[in-house]
Image (cartoon, rainbow, N blue to C red):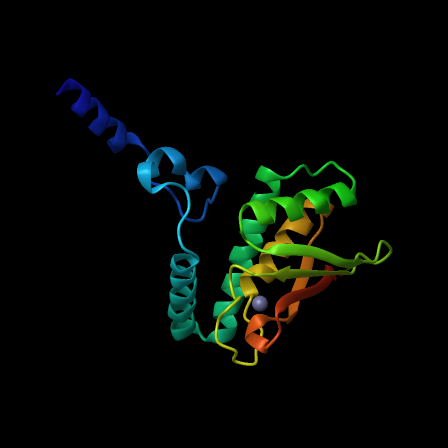
Length: 186
Ligand SMILES: [Zn+2]
């Protein structure tokens, strides 16, 4: 009984989580909390969340604004992903190799650096078997706004400058892989 009261008081005095203050800790201890169900789940569940969220935003504020929000969320995710899981003080080649390995380990995509201009910082990367879009119906458009932000956030964290990246090829556009092009914001 004492213990229960203590726990209740703890909860009473714990400040509510503010959604605007995302931190890596918000993800919590998945391994401990999920027990037998474990840390993995089907990709369809992730897409159910993503595409219903996008539909809800688009209905309320239009497609363009909804895409903007997804891109911004992706950028925040990419930044936190890089800050929490990647070494940022290593040479570019090592950084890219580690990023490629991590994206595969997390089963986000099969990532490749296609080109990087050391002078201008212009970059082209590809994502095959992508978590967001591989296998979705072809609608003749690029749909991976979250990934655009995600890669912008990761590169921005490493290079310590704002990066803008846009998708030019996508599964939804009839391609087998997604291709992203971009560079530092001028
Ligand atoms: Zn795509």
